[in-house]
Image 1: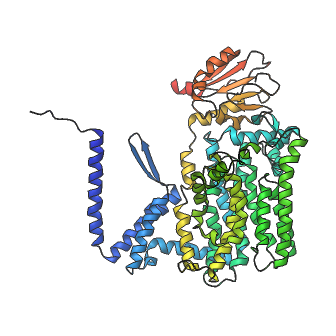
Image 2: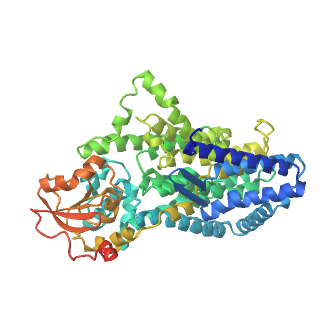
Image 3: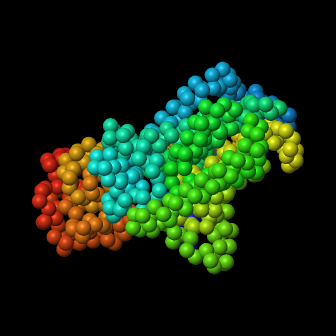
Amino acid sequence: MSAIRAPTRNTILYDSHASFLFSIGIALRTMFQGTPKFWLKAWDALVWILIVFPLVTGGIWLHRPGLKIELSEMAVPVVIVTLLGFWLYRRGTDLRASTAVRGAEKIARIWNREISRAPARALLLATLAVGALWAWASVRRHSALGTGAADLGIFTNAIWNLAFRGEYVSSVKNGINLFLDHQSPVFWLWAPVFRMFPAPETLLITQSFLLASGGAAVWFLARPYLETAPGTSKRILSALPWVYWAYPAIRSANAFDFHPESIILPAFLWGLAGMHSGRRSAQAAGAFALLIGLLGKESAGPILAGIGLAWGCGAAPATVPRARGRIWGVAAILIGTGTFIFETHVIPQLMGGHYAYSSLYSSLSDPSVLASRLFGWARFKFLIFMLAPLGFLPLFGGRAAVAAVPGFLMLFLSDGDHRLNPIYHYGIEPAVGLFWALPLALSRIAAGEICFHRLTLDRAQLVLLICTLAFFGRSEMVRVRRNSPTDHDRWIRSELISALDPDAAIAASGSLVPHLALRPWVHHLPILKKTDDRWVDCVVLDPSVGNWPLPGDQLLAMPETLHELSYELEFRCGALSIWKHRDAVRSCLTRLPPCADEKKAG
């Protein structure tokens, strides 16, 4: 008699997969025998469940060992709904009879009516709504200790030192003047606001609303191209701000800490919209916006030069005479190139240093390295990440798409693939040219200049809708719900931070640095010395939070290391500990905070 073997985990998975596929087969057989009315209801239900639900609420997810269930990403659901909808359309089913389409058309009619009546008011209200959502997601992440020393800690400490001590230095960058790091003089504009509201949230919130304002700029930029175009151009014009607000690269820039160069995108888009206006006052305002964008970062110089090249190629709308556009183009190329050289060569030398990122391009003399950087797989994926959400339509606006080339080249020619990760903010610079090329491409399609598989404006609008949704990713509600502060997080923010001596020089776990940056000196572990080679007064160590860039083995050994370096334990609450150097003249704590973990244990 043979032994009875218990089913292994693989057997269970196989059986469950087989049962699942069998059930799907039965369901498909039943569905294919269904009536057109049944199919329409099924498609309508899929739209509500697979698209509307995750878009509005963030969806659902369950991640456990051996089990992963998630309905929050938009890509696969959009593909399923699109293919099924196309099949129904070919069978003669009127998809406009579905409740989802009727609801979407009603919302679109309301938006089109409001933006036609009072575009400034409609765009302002929409910008405030989107900005508030983005700010909520960004601040929520910060509240859950999701931000880090790089980069919110760097800029919070720099703007605090500038606003309250008159020094443009950041201790998180080892006390250097930030003009030796990046050339972002526009960051100084944050100082008066920060002085009134000294908190990291000030930077996050203002960034969210500045980025959101670019959606309105896109509408004003696109209007000269599409307002007089034939077909459904006005309808697609009113949709372009929402394409901007759904764009993954912009939303990633908002979600990933704070960077003053985020202002480059909205400032340049507003600048282009103003310069293309027929009114002199609007052109003056546009020139000022371009200047603001130029002060965002040293990378803004090449972007302005790209804008000038696009103007020289005739990318400006009919409201700008061709000769004037060429003059603007030459001026923009000269100003952008000159500013870039000045910021990367002259200013660092005047300050006794050198441009910090010149090493990123040091090995370009090798042809093989140059080829790998231009045509590497990571570069190709980043290009798809930037173009796919726009349906690749900017490629048909080639004259304006030239403005995106410098932004891509600065990233593609740099060393390594780190900056090509979609979670970062590096899509800001090339997005300027893409959102200029998009309305130009649509106007060319409307005029019948594009002969690509009988591409019409209606079909382009459909492509743009599908791609915007398919590459949307996870909504901001996912970030809001996932970044739920724990009791420990709330205790740190409400009790511990206020109890620490505001004048003490501190080294801390990476995710604590932005919360401790309102002081002259703070740095992330394992940096324990200041620029004067003196030990920091206090160390705040919490293994339960993010400790990047502290390696795991060093994190485990940190208490022993602190003992060896003459640090003494002053306070402990759960995993968190505070250490005081024996040479520090004052205690790390101005008061003893109640320990939430001890209360729980009691």
